[in-house]
Length: 464
Image (cartoon, rainbow, N blue to C red; front, side, top):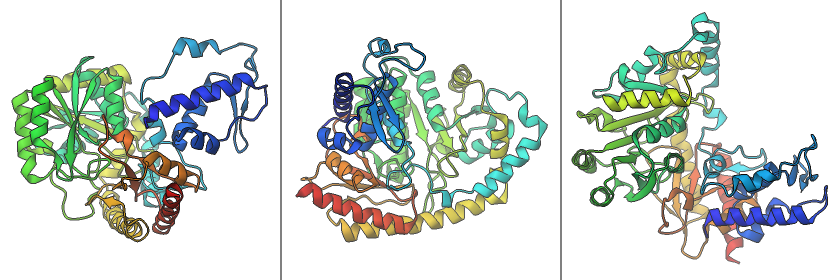
């Protein structure tokens, strides 16, 4: 069942109930709507928010949602906006759902950010405090970002990239939006791994690009299918996560790295390398970035500090050489002039201090332990799940038994205060089966184990 269709059904149900009711009447509960439309809790919450924005529903925290008065408190009727705006863009709510803050009583097996216990908040707070006291932090900042920060990102990428090739952005999502808008033209095809990070597909579609999936496995994108996709579409962009790809955790193998680069060069295209998980490798040694072996400017490098440090450190960079780098800098300046100076100064302070390496070492130990704990719990309570191998990142990718619908399971889990994210939105086309992305970086080990036990109970309920 398509999640976009489910969202539309929930929205229409809420609109009908609100228009038929009287001001103050209680609306259907989240659980009732989930069961009625087989929708995920995130989809239902987003639908309620949409109808509330139309002025039809009033949400009262802790009590539920109610039919709103026919006009706003100022006496102006805003219901015309529902007609003027029309239907939302397909999938526009997925990223919001992904980063939604769960309720305190829920167990988050879906978070894309580190558990607060794993975040280096003391070191970051000290760095920001020092940055705030420097008068230069509050002055104008170059569009491309501060030189020392750009130099650090360039050194981390390796290869031919230099500080002058880097542009600082407010997080990876903005960086990806900049890349797709700057290097693509509306109507162009962009190739993506399948499955892949849904925030990237959302940013590409928002830029007017046509997203074309290329199947990937635990060794990365399939080179034969990548070559065929370039031949068929004439695409000039390929979005790739070579290291611990989100959601499935695959790492582009040594055997495929050179072949993928050769295919991109032959196509005269750009490979957008999203190096989101650099620093999150828990087994072995991470391979160098693809940018490190790029001699001809085909790789556009994207790196963020958010995932490996804390959600509030919205600092990332794009690395690109030649005219592409210039175009991306100009695109970035049109979106938002520059990242706040104090935040850039704090990032420089943190990543160039001994606290950075200490944080990475402690983080990798903790993530390894939590990954193993989550895998053990799944093996014990959900042995039918097929869990892909993972040497790092934040997630385990679990294939579901063929008789289980992932949305039914997601709904049943939410009823037991466990938040999981279904696999369907991570595919740009039809998925080959049912999946869940289960996160081990967002909660302590004992909480992860309890979440899996509740998920097993939800699975039993779905099968009854």
